[in-house]
Image (tube, rainbow, N blue to C red):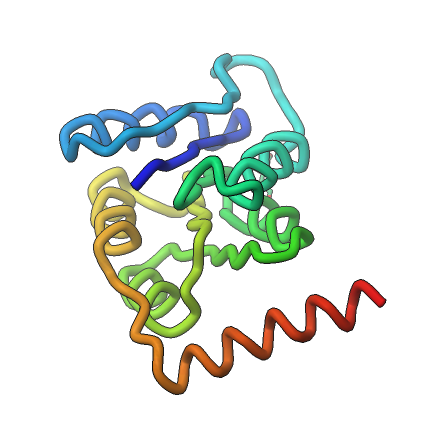
Length: 150
Ligand code: RB5
């Protein structure tokens, strides 16, 4: 398991916090920025860079943080083979993995308390994909990606 992290200015503090959680769990991660709490940055730049790294296979999973988690997910989902979901509750996190085989979690730093975010990250990292009928549905998404390319 190798995780890439990225955040805009709104997500910076939570990203830093999640780094501590990953270190505690002895999970290897790379932080792709932002590295400056004060400077306003554009979430599409950070999301695209990190999602490309997951798409290339450099990382197993990605965790992207902005104010709501929405902008990061919108951008990451532009890339084929990326399934990103904004999960600001535990139930969504569990089923994003179990049913959708999501490879990028996006979080809303302006919505979540730190403890909640840690629980969500833990569920995202530890919940396996159930496969079975859900695999058929994920395969359909991959087929649709091919059609969208044509
Ligand atoms: C930044 O103010 C905010 O718009 C951004 O963090 C995010 O919530 C966008 O989806």
